Image (cartoon, one colour):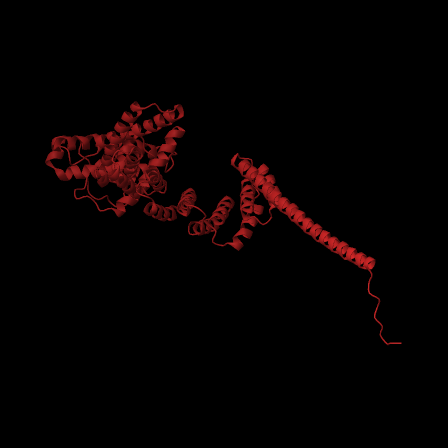
Length: 458
């Protein structure tokens, strides 16, 4: 018997069965493969659909939150943006908007935490630094506010970086002015003026007004005049130039600008019909400008100018002398009255008048500082004031005055005219210190006395 025997060959029926089994197994494998592929495709489609739906929901809640924030509904904005963040937790734009909404809702600590986390990933982000500066300003942290604003100004911005940096700088200037940081504000304003486009007239005027608020009428006037050299009839620049010149005590120049402004403004108002609120606001502004011009004209009528005739010059000195002497006698009588204080209270005035006096006090300070920095004109209106005169000095000087002085006396004796002018100026300044704020013509003489050489300076 052989060790290995061959198997009997398959018959036709067996071969048919085996072929059927192989085909069946192949079909089964193909079916399983196609089912697996189909399930993968369906799963991927469902995942993509779910992700797309999440993105759509996140965007929808984001838009709702932004709309609520614009409408002044910060709490609703916070809820909407938190929902948006739940659908897209890694989206930075939603985190920024949520932090802004938290800040607007008064939840400062949460907003600060959000912004600080965002700042860690992008330390130079201008928007984040700006928001942190605003929060620091709200908390009254002046050094941190200035630091964050500076980083925002020189940080990176998406979109129009120049405009964003400029707006951040202007915000910083407003903050510094509101906290009496005038020196820092003036430095920022000079940078803003240097970077401002020459053809952007509203921006130039805005910077000029901020310079006035920062007690820098000299630079404001320079900026307004630069605008007027290019656009001589631009009304806001004419008005600002007149106001700045008035604040510096350059009243002749102020009159020139205010005259031009009111003339052009009147012609402009008659050529078109403004809106009711615009008309009311402009009418109020025009009234203030007309009052400023009226005071300017009256002050110039009291100023002992050397540009007028000798007789008119002498007559003005005599008029001013009567006004100053009345102020002196009133102040001396108040000081000598029993129980009088060293600086009696001024007569009651309205709130408007009080605000006006405060504004004039600020302008007087700016004028005084400006006089120290500007070269004096060649022909002074009077001799240099004596150092630290007192009310007793005034009494002695008035007691030595001649019984009567006439215009011919002043014409014949120029030295007497200069002495009388200095006596008038000293009287107004000392009376201001001893007896409180002046009013009426005495107030105008005091303004002249504070900077007599600037009155007719062009």
